[in-house]
Length: 572
Image 1 (spheres, helix red, strand yellow):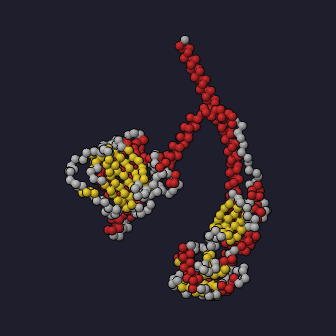
Image 2 (image 1 turned 120 degrees about the horizontal axis):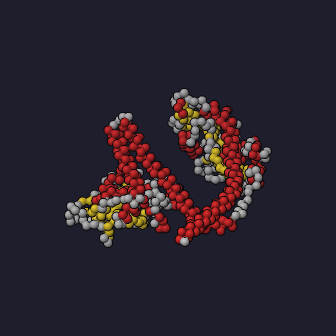
Image 3 (image 1 turned 90 degrees about the horizontal axis):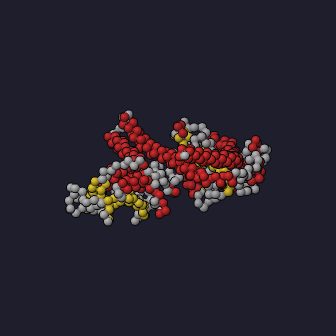
């Protein structure tokens, strides 16, 4: 009988397992069918939306290309006689701007009556800053503004492969103008002068842009099916201040827009928006409607049976993502000091240093980056041991202020490299039971955290105190602080504040986790609070100890110094 019962129980268990497997298979099949249907509809819609965005981008780029080509054929050709031939020498005598009165006389004429009365041609010699003009006489303010603006633009914005550029603006109190110019180069692409035309602002305006749009299809024929530009896209052009230079006659709101900058033409921004009435034509059919899965009832009934599995899969996915982020962050952080070490080591190996000062500087960088690399590796090792619960400590009585002071002294070169000052505020007679290496790792992690999330040029304050049989070491930064709702989560591995999630600040995400784990292994704790002078204060609390052996009862004076170059000292 017992044998039969065991066999029956075994068969029953087998049936339950089979049923569970069938339910899971049914749920998987229903989910797959529902997902495939939904995904197909979403994919179709996403593809259509991407195509519409791409169409808007193509239209904007085609408009920019057409405007550049139109100006290239007129403005570029008009300026070419004085700018295109490269100077054989940086000291070559420059042609007079009066040459432009012939070659560029018909270029960028004003549409408004009397607008050409203030038109003049100019030459700015970059070698001595002189300005020569032909045509209307510019005011002193215009002359000064023109020299400053074109000299700056010609040296920093203008590209050697350009044949023209346009700047829109004017000195304060004078009407807005268009400055069209080109840069003349000597050998080795050395800019020596700028030639150009000062004309009215409406020369680069609706008439020019409208003529370009009318003469060129902004979308390929295979997409537009022969429809006109105005029926497919709405075009607008704005200057840097947001002022509208050109706007299509019918302007309609659209989610499918693209902006492209006309860098050569006063940094104007061309915007192309697909008209709602053209969506069906350009998307090759109507957008699919969302469908309610037929098996929604089955999914609802069986979903409870796989909640744990889904939760486990989500957890595994999250762990996989965190692991990937961790590897990426650690690789990035390790690569930076390794690159510096390799660079300066190769410099020394190849004998490229010329003086002892350069040699000392190179070896100093190698030592500094080596320490930084060692700190990163120690952090990873501590994290690995903490995860496997293999961390072993050897606590001993330490003068906490002296131990922390030595750590800060070693850290000062790294702080100096990123323009951070260190200041100490040690209380007298603070002793703790702590492992020296673990204490060093905790303090360096807090200092590294303060540097990463504090402003450049800040002063980081490190201090010690004792209260109620406990010893504390704390680090204050001058950053934005930590919101109260996130002060517990910052100690979790790989966690970053919402405001820092997409920032350029690099980090492995384990520094504060290592601090908390090491503090707890000491029988202590760690937390974050507001610093007295703003920013965040990270506190590590350890068990206090009697005065370490070898110390006397003499009065101890703590010297505070906010300088990076001189570390605070504790005199006994």
